[in-house]
Image (cartoon, rainbow, N blue to C red):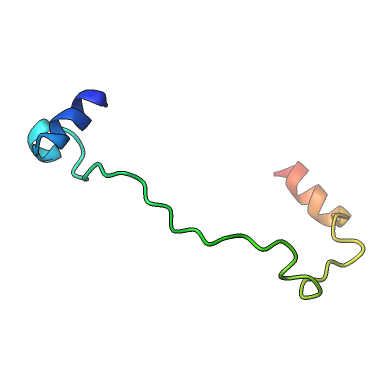
Length: 63
């Protein structure tokens, strides 16, 4: 990969190098700053969310 990057930096196209037909570019982060708690009060989880019904379990075990 280092050789491909060096050749790419020199201006060679990846298709000419026999590799994938994509350009190798630096990662650019576009993430926004996180604000913990901004969804507080907007998401509700039912009390039995982690209880799987017996028929669903049996369906997986019999498959």
